[in-house]
Image 1: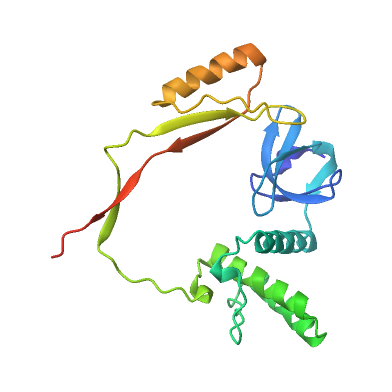
Image 2: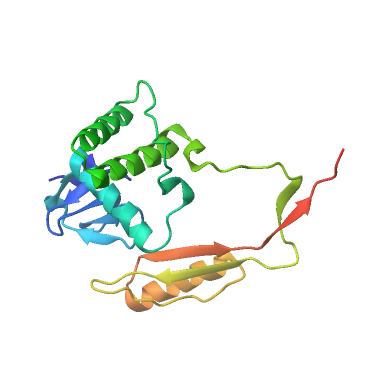
Length: 213
């Protein structure tokens, strides 16, 4: 199967691992996939991946939501609210499909499947329709702006994530400029032939009260 047909972020099914992942591109001859909901990427044989079906995507989304629940990282909009199931957005095929799945589960008295459909419908509404109303979050205006803290120096860092089984894990350590990080990457590649890095940038911010007019 030719991977050039895949776009970044496209859900694909990896036959070797029996998992759905989001296509991230290619590194050499291998395809890089990321777990649905986030996590560590894995390498896949381009000849053994294909576009994920709708059922496979929904199942992967449910597993990701359940994993966040077990890990205690579920956000408020992911939780069920009694008496207030999410409504499908008119004209959206995916909303309607999830609403049909929910109705079927309700008719079969399958509470677990009904809850899964509600969670997926809420996630879809937030992601595709920019809707956060189901979270019942209340925001109040506060006259503050967020600005970079000029008294603290930003930090740049790179981590080598090359390796077949495990990451190299070498790190540049905190650096004061991007140039220092790039120089470390060049030296490390010359010494090890490793070519894949995860880079991070850290700065500090403060909330400054805006003048009241």
